[in-house]
Length: 628
Image (cartoon, rainbow, N blue to C red; front, side, top):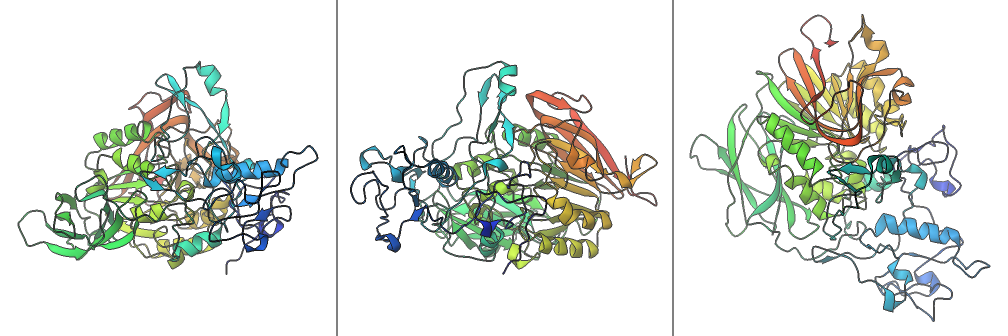
């Protein structure tokens, strides 16, 4: 069981069923401003009808009660087609009720993004119905008949249409459904940027019960996510693709590799890189069927020596071997400067702006030993092409440089069990079992990096884990990463859920650096109470973005001032990468601009790709920590 509590700051949205108000602590009810999406699972309304035995339908065939006036029995409904909601009765004017039309559109947006004409296939006569959408040759089935998802239109913050390289566009990069990002005719900057529009494909996290059951090992999730359970077909590669390294909990002695191959039963061979020793062979464990064919698999390389170079390769069940990839394990404790890279949301502009950010970072810090990303790697989790674009932008860097990720709200978009996220990444299993692969810690080079799930799911368990991981930290440094910020970078949100959940623990343990994304703007600051003689002596809170999607911000941001905090630097319409260098008693952090929008604003007037937006040092060389 999961205990919920209503949000005392808000009153219920009359449009929501009363049984589900308070299921998630998000700003998705009236009076709360803008927040993330709201997924609920209400019982059926009286004036709506569901397909099934109660209405004389054949569940196996997918038939349901015909809409009145739509023709004879069963007209407009075919097996496996259409929405699960039909009705209500027509109004006095003979048209479908306005509420039905509204909820039908919301349902289509939540579950049927692949229908590019925006029509509900199940409500159309057979002669006018579009064929089922396909993703890389795999048919995507209709939504399951027991899942109804409502997205609150009030919960979507606006985002600005960007004008980059002389054209206007919205949405994500091209995906497997063939929806390439298209450019509109050039418009003036004033005309374009004065307009804000809601996201065409809003993200909506799920309720705690749904997410928890998935993360705890629920099975049979293919139908729920709208992904066809097709027979695996060979991906477009020889042996394996999307090869991603991740450190074990002790990064000096273990490493995992996750990849996609045509067939399960692959193996990983590894050995020291400085000789011709007989490689150790480890059978890979299947993680799940890939969205577009193939099987995601993972293997653990154990009993490694600290600060040692290794090489590994992936071998198919038939004995075909891929190329050797090299990596170096972490030192045992601190041993000289360690460079890391941190990215915020990629999400949109995966083939252009995200690629620019990633390549700029790798060119500036070619010897980075660890990559961190705080969620929303993609926009639509069920679109395999977006995962491919996200990975391709890095030119295979994660195959040789370990990567740690946090899960964002978009990793749940049209994928309520975060299947694609869990298929792509394998993280240490040292967090709560109910939150495995999303809440964990890694010790590397004198730093404990703690990653939390956030997303308003089991926040109490996450806080307890965070408290324990910080109390038991054997290292000098601590970094905490999760998606939604403690202090929002944009002014469209003032979500204090994560400050309420985590800030007291972060402050009590004096965490060195907190890394967040989600807000598509830049901010760095601290609690005002930690300022002594004009110098911050407490945790640093940082929010960053890395793609093409931007939210507005300004000099007046109540998410900071209203929670006893202040910003040192802030920026809007500015994507960056962050270089983090840890030495014996200092941590140097530098944010570098990679992409700008036409309405870029920075608090310090920094401008231009390659320019340093922000730079600071956390100094522990004296008696007290100072941030300067």
